[in-house]
Every structure is written in structure tokens, then in C-alpha cells.
View: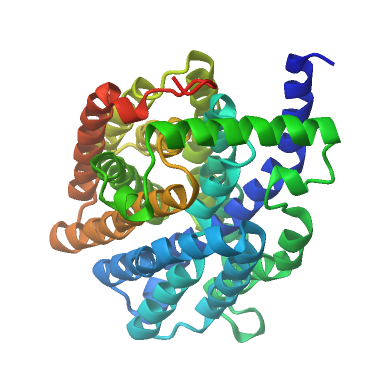
Length: 433
């Protein structure tokens, strides 16, 4: 078997074993963190929540997430991804189902915060984990396939939420309570599958042939050694590195747009169309179906060309244009089209973006650096929903919040282009030069 044939057969086996499962986990995670957007169609009226109360509760998840992100990922690097991801999955499932017991603003804030604490470390943990299974040249596409969990969660979760909300009054429970209960259980039930199916390192993968194990382990070790030789960072140095903070700003800009969109799209669509919950769910799925396709195509293009920065900047500008258009249109059809453009642009950045940190961070520094980037990004998940809620209460319109997200994506495009000249982020060859 030639080297190329060995590479292809190994990556096919890794793709079949790892990617579908971690994608499933991420879809469940995204449904559990964003289904509050659909709950709001009934819950806000049932419990008397204003737009700002809802926006703060939706976003406070990310404060809990941000506070525990770095320590969670450092523990993962110490104890192994398999066990720690299983722990994350089980505890977030508990709090996701407990959301059915929300009865006032205080319990809403507390349970959303604890859900964020429980899930902290999951995304950067999976990204760190993938860096042990995919060589740098294939990593953006692998990350893009994993990241399509963001839009796919809406494609699957939006119609499902609409159906579950229709159970309103069944056995004395509100529709939103049924939604939290049923959508929270899969995380708990899949905990055992994580322990059985995930393998911490290629050296331990008995589902690969010896030749495949040796090839993948050697390739990954060589790349990590090359990165370490060029940029040998301690955890502390990684957390203080200026490039890490520039990447963190990009994550903040993208997350502000992404979660501002996800948490408010159901209510925006409802205001445009007056549809029932199932209709809102079906229409809400449209932008995210397009975003899923866009993420895969942009990630594939980025890997084929080896270019990352314009594959971040151009989608950012496209997303900004979508948000600007959505702020001013009143037609339901044009509005959904504008939200679709915004979703494709914002989420299309993910694969190329998340391939950058592991170019110059390795081992524990990689775990800590990725966690810091995602922590700052998570603050965007607080700012986006809360800002839209505040503006909505103050003006009665969504336009101001949408324009804020457009501004941040535009700034993100500028930063991405500026990062092209940073030596730390230039590709590392197998020889380390």
C-alpha cells in the first residue's frame, strides 16, 4: 500500500468512526442550549417575561460557560477527552431537562447559568480532541463537518420544537415544558456511548490496523513537534499571546452574530409571518439548512487551497450584509432570505477559523488557548441575545441589534485580513519549516 493509499484509508476509517458521533453530540448540545428561543414563543407569555428578561436569561448561559471554559478544558487535557466529555454530557443533560421547572425570572437565570457551567469545555474539548485525529491539511474540513452541528441543530430542532410546543396542556404541562424534557434526555442517555466509542489517542485505536495507527500517530506527533519547535508556549504564554486574543475577538464577533440570530429568529419570524409554532419552526430551519451546506463547501475550499484568512473575511462580510438587510426588510420572504444570507456568512467562518489555533499551539497550551478563545467568544453569546432584547424593549424593533451584529462581523473581516501577515499562523510543513 502506498503512502497516499494508507493516508486515505486511515482518514476514511477515522471519518466513519469519529465525525458522525461527535457531530451527533454537538447537535444535541446546540439544541439544548438554543431551544430556549422556541420555548420563548409560549414561555414568555406564560411567565410574563419581557424581551430584556428573556434576552438576559438566554445569554446568561454563556457567562457560566465562559467562567468554567478554561479550567474544564485543562482538566480534559489531563484526564483524557473520553471521560471528561462523558461527564460534560451527563451534567448538561440534567440541567437541560431541569429547565422544565422554570417558574419565574430567577429560576430561569439560575438554570440557564448552570446549564452553561455544565457544558463548559465541550466545544474546545472536541476541537482539541480532533487535533489528535486529523493532520493539519485535513483539519478545517473535519472541523467544518463537526461545526455543521450548529445549523443542523436548527434544521432538526426547529420543526421538532414546533411539534413539542403543540403538546401544550397535555398531562397538565405547558408545551415548552415538554420540549425541555424530551430534548434534554438524549444527552443523559448517550453518556455511556461516549465511554464506549471515543478513543483518546490513535495509539489506543484498536479499530485501526497497525499500519494505520502507526501512520496517523507518527503524522500527528511530527506536526505537533514542528509546531512546538516553532512556537513553544506554556499555558501561561498561550493565554497572554496577542494572536490568541485577536482570534478571541474574531470568535466574539462570530458568536455575537450566531447566537443573536439563533435565540431571536423564531420570534422575528413570528413577528413577520404570524405563523403557529410548527410553521415558525419549519421556516426557521431554512436559513440553517443553507448554512450547513455553506459551512461544508467553505471548509472544503479552504482545505483545498490551504488559505484560511479570506475564507474567514469574505463570509464575515456576506454575513454582515445579511444582517443589514434583515434590519430593514418587512416582507416575510425577503426577511427569511436576508436571515439565510446572514446565517451562511456567519457560520461559514467556523471551519477555517478553528483550524488556526492549532497551527501554533500544542499540548496543554493548545487546550488552554482554544478554551480562552472560545471563552471570549462565548461572551458574544451573552451580548448578542441580551443586546437584541434591550433594543427591542427600548424601540419595539429588532433592527438595532441586527446592525450591531453586522458591525462586529465587519470588524472581524478586517482583523482576519490583518492576521495573514502573522508568522505564528503561517502553515507548518511536515519538516517544520
